[in-house]
Amino acid sequence: MKTNCFSPLCGVDVGEVVGLHTTLQWMAALHYDNVDFDLDSKRVVNHFKSNIIDHSEFVCIISACRQLFIDSFQNSHVEFNRRQVNEVTHELAQVALSHASSHVYDDVSSCIRTLIDNEM
Image 1: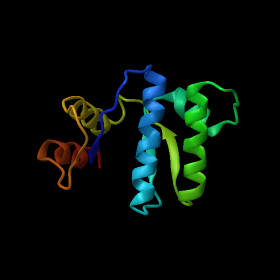
Image 2: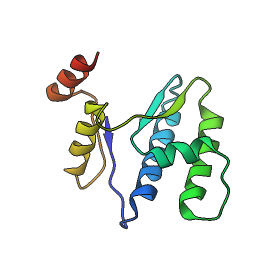
Image 3: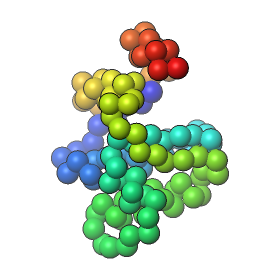
Image 4: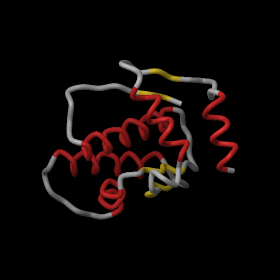
């Protein structure tokens, strides 16, 4: 698990897509493939899967995500998953909000492990 903090503050959509880009970079650096990237932002996923072109900050970051995905992931997917469906992701997001700087956790905490076990 990895949490990341950045500033300045930005809109929710830009924050969501920056989070996707950061995650793609991290997984690519670890040489992971066959990864399912589940997001609870339907707008980010829809734009990621479409070829909408404009010069907004949001779409420029989406384009960078798409290129990184194409270059680094052969057997992976970016999918929309409602927040209510994935309690683990929601709990991880809440944990990330409590940190003011980036953290990488090598061990999954017991509360998260319990949630994962319950979803399986």
